[in-house]
Structures are given as structure tokens and as C-alpha cells.
Image 1 (tube, rainbow, N blue to C red):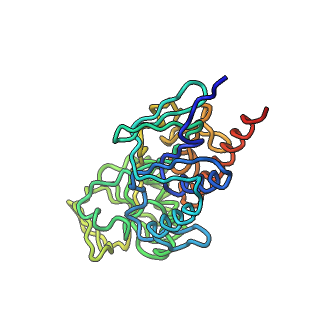
Image 2: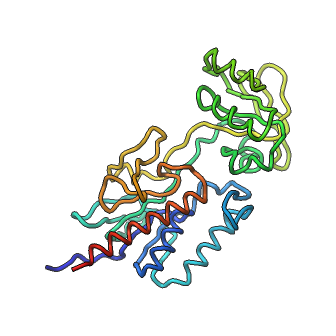
Image 3: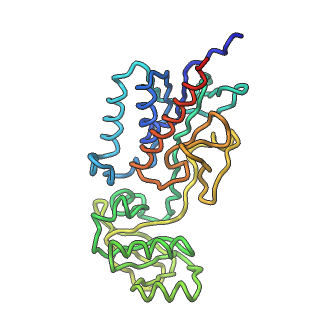
Length: 305
């Protein structure tokens, strides 16, 4: 029987920590790997990355350059700056991807490491502060702001939860809901017991200089001085590929994955922020390595006679 020809053993869509980590493991396992990336990472507005042992404080640009430098030593791995706009299954054992320039490539396995994008609040003045004093993750940026007056942008369950979570970094927290907060009496009472004030007025603008938040101005009522703001307004997938391929999604809006980042579709893996786990750089890299291990094991077993 003639086996189908594939351009690669594995195609990886996305060259963030998950995709690059998977490419390294697979490349070292003698697998032909194609990596496609459009160059718009989730953390592109972030000044520094944190929580990655041996890389704490590195810039995202430096991290990606170092990772690509590691991969350059392996002739088994090819990286290309290109956007994948479609993906389909090829028979029972393979996948085909289509690039924005209409080229197509095929592989036996497909790993989506396409990440998510944050729903950044549409507040005047926020864009100039985003990544410098407006953030979404206290584990990533809370240490530098410990003990400082902080604001939370959010409402309902999200705002309530993040406000309480931030008490690990500061005792001076104000929840700004930018409109009706939709909290019940029990939630309001718990916030009050933990010293968290609530401002429900609409936000007119954020004010600051050189990327540093100084105050929040409301349409009514007095402005408040704040050093930084953390927002919790949800996220959405950066790519429609997982949905096109028929992946199952969880309540968080990310792909439902199993052990080693498998999906219910044989040969399809999803790792990184688009997957189920904690959305940290170090976790994404670990998920990419796990997915690569599982992919390689499957390929080895398929080659046995």
C-alpha cells in the first residue's frame, strides 16, 4: 500500500511559548516540523515577562528571539511568518492547512498553539497605559505593584473575584465597574469586609504620564488616585481554526483538552492559552512540551511493524 505524502510530520500553528517549545522537542526527536506564525502575540504590549524560571523579567521580544535561536540549530524545524486561515482533516490520518497566500501544506499531526486575545476595555486613555500600568494578570505583574493603590476594572462575578484575589498584593483596592456592578448583597458585604471599595459610576477616562496611571476620572463623583489597574473582561480565541475543526470548548471559552493536550479529534492537539490550563508563559511552554511528547509517541508507535 502506498502511504500518503506529507510535507511534514507535524504542523504547528502559533510561535508563542507553547508552539516554540513543542517545535524544539519534536525537532530533537528527528521530526519534520513546520511552524507558522502571524507575529501578533497576546503579550506584545507587555514590557516584561515574569514567573518563568531563568527568564524572569525578560521582554517578550527577547524571549521569542532566544527561542528562535535555539530552534535555528535544528534542520528538522522550519519557521515561517505566515497566517494560517483554514485547516481540514485529510482522510483518517492527516491534516491540511491553508495560508493567507493560498499555499497549502499537509502533516500527519496538527498542533494549534494560537492563543487568545484579551477583551481590552474601551476606556479613553487606557491604550496608552496598557502593558505599563494596566494589566490583566496579577501573577504576571502584581509583584512590581505590591502595596500600591490598585483598581480593578470589571463587574459581576469577574470583578468580584479579581478584587479579592488582588488582596494578596495590596490592601488598597477599588473595584470600578464602569456602570451597574451587578453584585448581590453577600458579595458587596464580602468586599467591604476586605476593605475593597466599589465605584459604579461610568469612567470618563484614565489619566497618567509616561505609561504610569495616576488617576481614574468618572463622569460623576470625585476622581481617585491609583497606581495601576487590572481588568477582567474576558477573552476570545485568536484563531477560528479550532472551531472549524470541530473542537469542543469549555465554559472559559478555550478548547477542551485531555492528557498531553489531546482533543477528541485524533491527531489534533491544542496547547498554550487556547487550551484549558492556567494562562502563564511557563505553563504554555510546558503544555507545548507535553503535546510534543504525545505526538512523537504516537508517531513512533505508528511506525512499528
